[in-house]
Length: 87
Image (cartoon, rainbow, N blue to C red; front, side, top):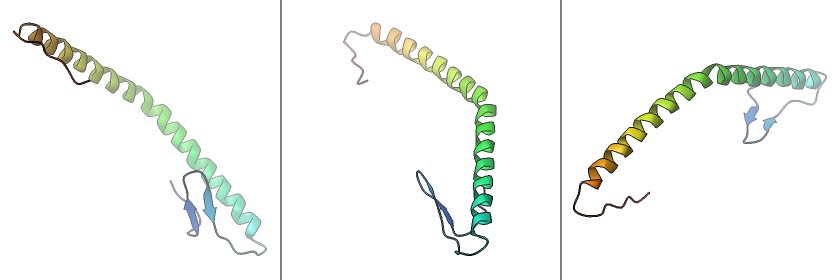
């Protein structure tokens, strides 16, 4: 991701940009808007491409955790004392 203006700063909910008040101000703002729009599109495409991998990873980790919990419950049920999890 890039910003075409070294005097631009990404804030949490806006972009702060300092430009000279001259004949090129409008062009600079339009250029910044175009670059930011492209950056957002790139991020959207990346997220769309990575979502299946993320979903698969989450699913695998969740299944592993279910097995761990089941194994722990089986182990704890064989104990002579009650086991309480903090969760």
